[in-house]
Length: 413
Ligand SMILES: *Cc1c(COP(=O)(O)O)cnc(C)c1O
Image 1 (tube, rainbow, N blue to C red):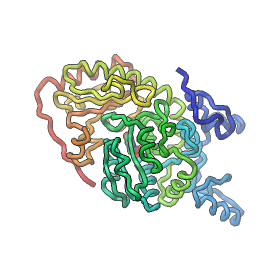
Image 2 (image 1 turned 90 degrees about the vertical axis):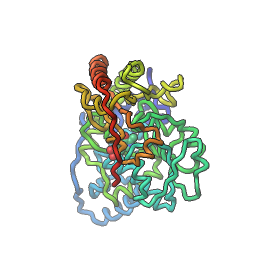
Image 3 (image 1 turned 90 degrees about the horizontal axis):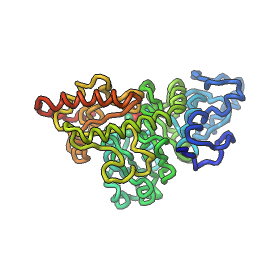
Image 4 (image 1 turned 120 degrees about the vertical axis):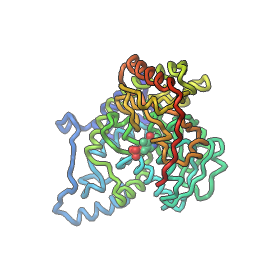
C-alpha cells in the first residue's frame, strides 16, 4: 500500500511531495545532486572560521533566539549541517515544520520539561505507562516540575493553570497500551501534547496529524535501527523549536554529527525495516498466544478485536507474560539477543521489571500493569521460523522446572 505524506504539498527545498518510502530515501538530501555529491557530507567541525567578527556578532544575535540563520553555525554547540539534514528529514516524515535533535531521547524530553518549567508552567499531566526513565524523570521532580499521572479519559480534569505539558506514549513502553491521540490532544488543548512516537515511528503513525504539538523519538531505537547510535529528537512547530534550540545550545545536549549522519542513513531504510519487522511481530504474537508456556500477550490490535488505534499495523514490539520464570527465557534464548533497547535489525528481548522499568517504584510498576512475569521483545529482521524455533525452545526451558519467580526491587537514583 502506498502511504502518502498528506501534511505537506511540497518539501522545504521545493521538491514535490511523494510517498513516505520515497521521501525516507530523499528527505534531507534533495540538494546533494546539485552539490555534486551522492552521500551526505559529514561535517565534524567544532568551530567555523570567520574574518568578519561584526557579522558573526549579528548572526549570534539571531542564533541566540533559537532561529535558524543561513551561513556557518559559528560554533558546533549552536548547530551542525549534518545534524540539520537529519532534522529536516525526520520533520518531513512526521509531517511537522521542523525538528530539533538531541544527544539522546532523555535529553530531548529534558529540554521539553525545562521549556515548561522556564515558562512558569512546571505542572505535567502524564499517562502511564511510560518508558521507565521518562517516568522517573518527571516523577522525581529533578527538573522542578510536578506531575499528575492519569488515565487518558481523566487528563482534561487534571489540567491546572500551570500545566505546561501533557505526556503520552502510544503504543506505550512496555505494555503496548494504545491511547486515542486525537481525543487526548483535543481534551487537553491548548496545553501542548507531547507524544512519544519511538515505538510506532512515522511509518506506522504520525501523532502531529492527530493534534500532538511535540513528537518525541528516542532515535536510538528504530530511526538509527542498527543498535549503534544514541540520539533523540523532537519534531514540532518552528515557534516551539526556537525554545528547544536555545535550551540545547545552553545545556549542550547536542547530537554528535556522526550520530546525525547515521540517523539520516537509518531513515532511508526505516519504512522497509519497520514494515518487515511488524509483519514478523504480528505472526509471533499469534503463535505466542497459543503457546502453553505463555499467559497474556500484548500486541496492538489483539486485545479488543479491533485494528490498532491510529497505527497502520501493530508494530515491531510484542510483550508477553510467561507462566513460568521469565528470567529462564532470557537466559535460554540463543538467536535472540538478551538485551535492553529496541528497534534494531536483530531481535532483542528483556525483562522490564529488571531493566527498562527497574528504576520505577515497584508499586507504581505493578499498578501500571507491568507484571514481574512480563517480557518485552523487539522483533528484528531475522526469518520468522528461526525466531519461533528459538522462542519456543526458550519458553520450554522456562516451563520445565518450577523455579520460583524472583522479585526485583527498584533502585532509585
Ligand atoms: C529508549 C526510550 C527513551 C529514552 O531514549 P534514550 O535515547 O535511551 O535516551 C524514551 N522513550 C522511549 C519510548 C524509549 O523506548
